[in-house]
Length: 452
View 1: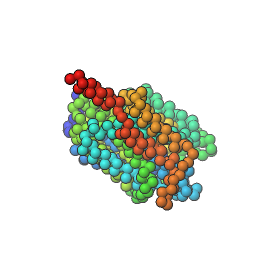
View 2: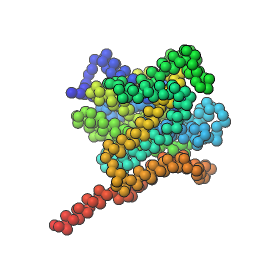
View 3: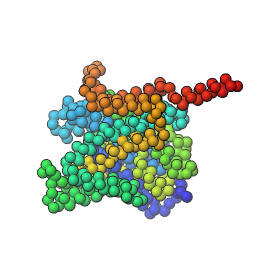
View 4: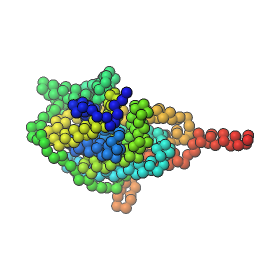
């Protein structure tokens, strides 16, 4: 038995289930902006409004919540990194001023990347979801996700280095919650890890412990100055063609994640709902894309369907979409509370680093899992060639000697285009290289014709 999407529930139960969805997404959603330097307030507004946008376009039938996409972290870092980013020549030593200058280019690129979802949604509408997936199979999307996870790994190390003890404690809590937790505990390991490690940091601070460099383990100064209610610090986007080119390939990872969650929800419903057909993958993809466009335009990270909230649906068998919509409203309300942002900002870098250990590794592991779930045969030459070449291009160009080409008045470092080039080459190889299954089927058909 399941609770249907349009069923009427008592108001207290609806609110309680809405908070459940809010807590499930909260830990990972606030972690993303903390890592890249964006506003938690703006992010909460972005995911809340984005979720409601998707529900409108999906006719209120799909119980999904949109949270911050970690796939885009690598793309944002390529824009904002003061050493290896595309605007590194503008860095003068003032990190706050540098980020304030270049983050609008990252969010502007995110907004344009969101249009990729919309464009592909149009293709899905024309071709149908099954035929469309032939041009974006797991041999392309899985290596892309794997590359993103591997590229993010150094950032987890850098953050953890500030206080390894605290980072290890955070990681231990996250792992234990994931491995030994039951019910909702298993669905919220990141939130539990952040809260648990935060309490440890408070205790360490109270007994006079400091970070190895002598700095305070935790700093509460910003909380006293924060108001309970206030406007979120929205960012006006800027647009740079190189930043856009760098950002678009990361959309393919979230598109693959979106499709996977639609399939998962269909399976969880026991076939009662088929979201690829009704309301249709083209509608849900368009909703996800427009949500990302909206987020980019206000200064928030890209959005994606959240596996944590899909897990809540699987656990409760509750497909009621009003519950998720209420959670989105709660997120928007929190987005207009500066004190929430101030409290979140006190989370130590090492805690974020410890949580990132698990998150970034999970991104890479999801890429591997996608290959396994799709039963991709690496023994086939086409599959082996596409995956191998994509991995070498994505990783090799990033760590090889710098190659710079001049396009007009812009110097383009190819090392920063590794994933973009890997995705393009993967798509071309998938189209050009012969499919062994198709060849065998054609030979069998010819053999039958000769016999007849």
